[in-house]
Amino acid sequence: MPVYRLALLGFGNVGRALARLLLEKRPDLQTHYNLDFIITGIMTGRHGGALAPKGLDLTHALDLAERGASLNDLSTEPPPADGLDFVQRVQADVLFESIPVNYESGQPALTYLESALRRRMHAVTANKGPVVHGYQHLRALAQQHGVRFLFESAVMDGAPVFALHAYGLPAARVTALYGILNSTTNLILTRMEEKGETFEEALAYAQRIGIAETDPSGDVDGWDAAIKLAALVTVYMGVPMTPQQVLRWGIRDLTPDDIMAARRQGKRWKLVCSARRLTNGRVEARVEPQMVGPESPLYGVRGTSAILQIETDTLGTLSLREDNPTPRTTAYGLLADWLRAIGVVP
Image (tube, rainbow, N blue to C red; front, side):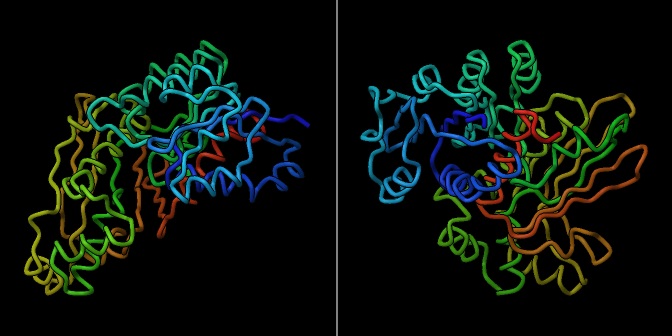
């Protein structure tokens, strides 16, 4: 039975969810796919890291991380100094990368993934930054070294958004994309409507339950939605795009009066992502609050749910909806990408 060496770069909510999912799915992996794994390295942002070529105790690592303790004591070699040192020294077949996104450049995740590919590791990421800032480069680098660069969890968590493009739409031309891609803003707008909360009250709730960051600007100012839309345009439409090229408006200025005015018209406010191919071959992409009515598939997408509509020249419009995702959902996308990378599933 093949035993794959796995390395985890990033051990926050998503990285720990992946660790728990790997432990849970180990019997299925052994029975249905005839494979097993060991974890040969984990690197955190603030709690050290461990290198263990013969494998480390993943349950112990989870316990340490959830107590905020250092992982350095798990290392059987000198602990890695930083993320790049980790990638350059870890002995692994697959690198899972789930560090925070950099909207402007995709760094340092982009450099970490490059280094992993050059070392002939499959590179699997939940990070949107490297997709929009390095998609073609990383794909070419992976092909050059006989490995894969995969990123299913970069948009809509573990929903098979990019697998649909890769395997489900041969020879189809995508002409437009439309949807709700940011869970935090959708939750805020839902609570403003259903609970009568102000923007500040709804945001504070999202922060209390861990959906919104202490600095929520990436969500409420539309950056997260813009980088996700840019990633979709880059992959689905074949037109490289960065979030800076997306026309972007956030939801900070929406008031309870705006929400109630829409309700009186039988409509709801949503932070809508849209991209359309123009006649000159370029793509116009926008993130902006819009009022949508009951005739729109976006109308019933509540709370932290998301939806993507894909308009093609062959199949009309396809819709992919995800209800109330969690870090486990994102972790599943990483797990599925690993199985695709090693060829046990298409």
